[in-house]
Length: 72
Image (cartoon, rainbow, N blue to C red; front, side, top):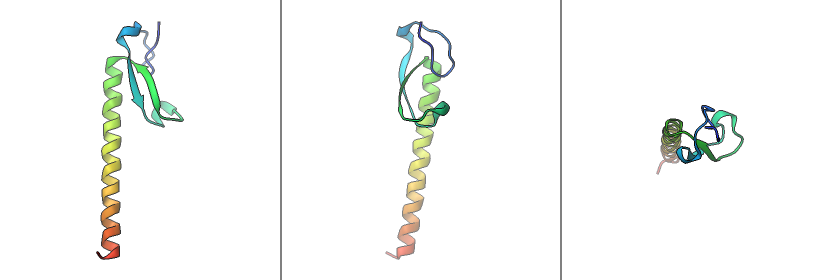
């Protein structure tokens, strides 16, 4: 039986979901898809959403600083 990538519990293949994980998640060296149980999958998706929100916020802050420094 396959195991959840996150909690290592065994599940029937039908219950596991392919979930996209980002580089650095649990020591991963690259982005990709892994099999996770529904609970771990939803946690990983929430984590991905937070990372995306923080990245967009940082890009906006950098854009405002560049705009202010250039004086446009």
